[in-house]
Image (cartoon, rainbow over all chains, first blue to last red; front, side, top):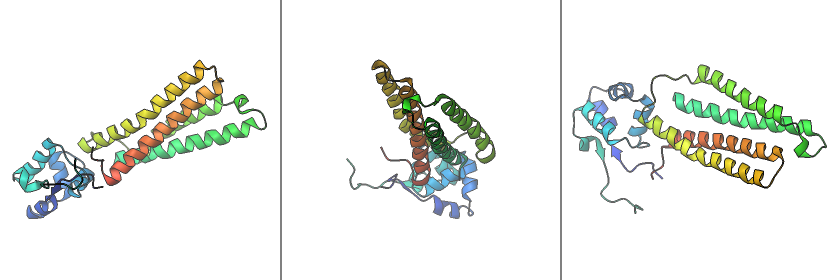
Length: 76
Length: 138
C-alpha cells in the first residue's frame, strides 16, 4: 500500500527553477533533505502548512505542486 | 540516513543485545536450580544501566542531535511511541495480576523487564519501517 494518495510535481518544479537541489528546497522550507525526498517520492504527505510553504518556494499555486486523484480505489 | 533513523537502529540493537546478555547471564548463573532462585537482580540492573550508558555514548558518536526535529520526524517519533506504549501497559497490567496472585518476585520483575524490552523493540521497528516506507495512511 502506498503511504499517500497525494502526488506531486516537486521534482519537475525543482528542475524548472534553476535545478534547485533537494537540500536547497529543504533549507527554504525548514525541513531535512530526507523529508523532501520522502515527499517527492510520495512516501510522506506533508501538512497543509508545509505544502503551502513548498508551493511558495516555487512561486506557484498549491494545485500546481500537489494533486489528489478524483476517485481512489479501495477508499471508504 | 537521518539522525533519528540511526537513533532508532541504536535502540533496536541495544534492546536485543541487552535482553540476550541478560538471558545468557541469568541462565548461566541458575544452573540446575529452579528458575525462580536465579540471582537475576544484578544482571537485570547491569544490563539496564549498561544499555542506558551505551545508548548515550552511541548517540553522541553516531546519531548526534542536529537542530530540531522537523514535522515528518516528529510524526514518525509519535508513531513509534504509539506502537510501543501498548507494551508498557501490558507489562504494568501483567505485573499487577502476578502480584495479586502472589507470584514470585522473579516473575514480576521479569515480566516488566520483558515488556520494556518489547516496547523498545516494537517502537524502534515501527520508526525504522516508517522511515523506510513512509507512515501508514489512517
